[in-house]
Image (cartoon, rainbow, N blue to C red; front, top):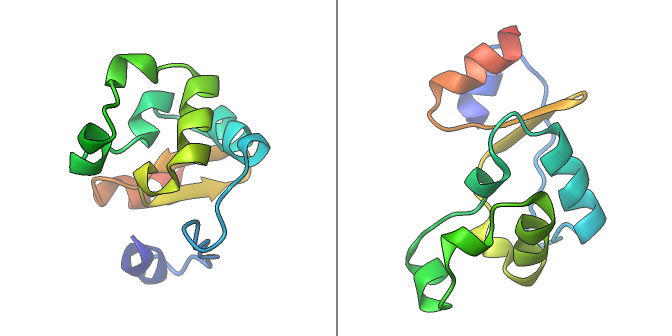
Length: 101
């Protein structure tokens, strides 16, 4: 996604959320801007399963925020924020569409 941003000439700020995890308020703000379903912000990878988590329990903004505070590595990435809008930048072609809109 970073390469896509650069090729479009867009400036960006990279947030290393594993080094500086977002707090609950910041996550809720991000989720409020998100054009995707809040549950899509959660990676359902082997770590998710290893923790004994159930995707059905993480569908509301509050539940997603609480989960990501406890397990920041489960946050889907990249997330692009522009003003009051945000998307998950997967697949890559969404990045150009988002920047154009």
